[in-house]
Image 1: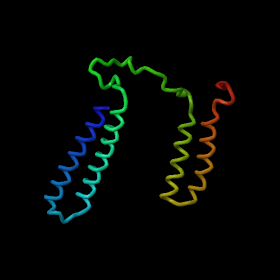
Image 2: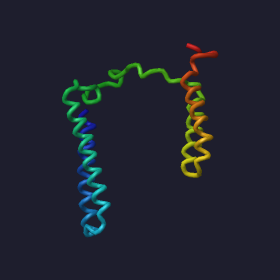
Image 3: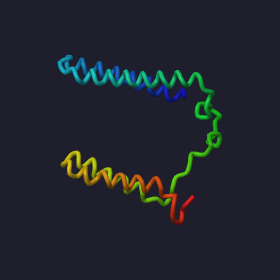
Image 4: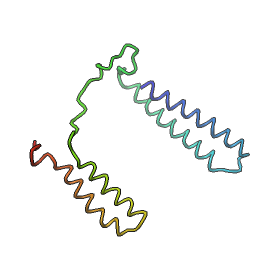
Length: 133
């Protein structure tokens, strides 16, 4: 995890520099910009610190070795359905719900049952039909 924590440490240094430059150029009259950039710096430091802390406890990964090969990290990533249209139905019905938050609550009441129906169909798609497990 050396690459990951180094990336976040470099990113936090970037936010520190940009926040300071932003504050100096605005003569610290606009407080939101530097504070937001310093908070981004703090978040990057927290993530980098977490990755460094957990990386010390783990063995060296193939990604961290110079002689590591792609085949060293081969493994089962799970089963992903190549023919399912249910994710599209879930996304479309969720879009109706979120559009209802912007337009009016009446659309949320239309979209919520559609989300429930599409999510149920996606969960149970392999329990019946040609592709039943």
